Image (cartoon, rainbow, N blue to C red; front, side, top):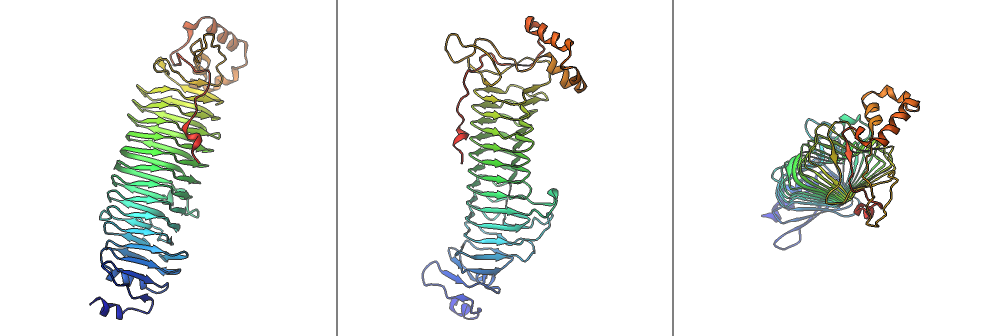
Length: 418
């Protein structure tokens, strides 16, 4: 029966090799790939020869589609180039290009539907697609080793994301490179995801979390983006060993983020704010390095019960900005943070400064509330106020105090991220 069907195909399809699972060798050109996909059985292996294969195509059977060097699937600017609509599909080693350009129809290079559980999207090159790879509903998919080049010819709000996830529990995104587009990885309404060892350049947000819980972001690198890692409306996220280098606005942003861990991350290169913590509660920040930003840590809007210790806060124009009347302690079990501007002594040699450190004073609070007061910073009145505050510590307003500041910066695991 299969032999009879194959006999009717164009000459661009080589007969499948004999065996329980068949291997189809597909020449470039024409609609050969679409024809074979209509005949392939679960477990079959489709090998695409070098050259351009026409899309869009839908993979509706559990097969593997693998390209030899130079194999391309071109969508011709229409819709989704490759749609995965079956479980246990592998798409590997292909250049996939030229999707449609409509966000409302979710035009993508590779689109994996809710039926695409355990899809493996590996080692592909995605060029000129509105959305690079979209996981919409599958369980336990894996996206690894792909290179995504987003569209730069559109305004930012018209672009799609490099890798987009919606309600895809247990999925892993690792070792990918995303250049251009809107966000590097955008995830919403999901859980138990892992994003690790990815590289993001020239996007809005490197990683953008919304309404996603119990997940991990580890050993990623964000370079030259608007913002490195935005964790929003999410809980129990482990953000470990990531780097933000030269991002413009923020290295790390928390907005309604709760019970999450930020450990061993590094923000360098002159962002406006290394970290912005807004209405985020019961998070821990340990052994991170925040260096060379306009503000090291901006802490505001009722954030409560956050543990901040063991961090290196180095050479920021303003080390901490906290506008509030509460007293907040940033040390834990006798271990505080390293402050590059803390001129203190350690007479007993225990690695902790002999005096608590307070990064902000009454003058800082005055300037934040009334920016025009900057004109008076060099006036005798302000100098007298600073002197009085140093002589009478009771004049200090509420704010951040580190009761056990470190004398040396701890090493950050992010220093090993390449």
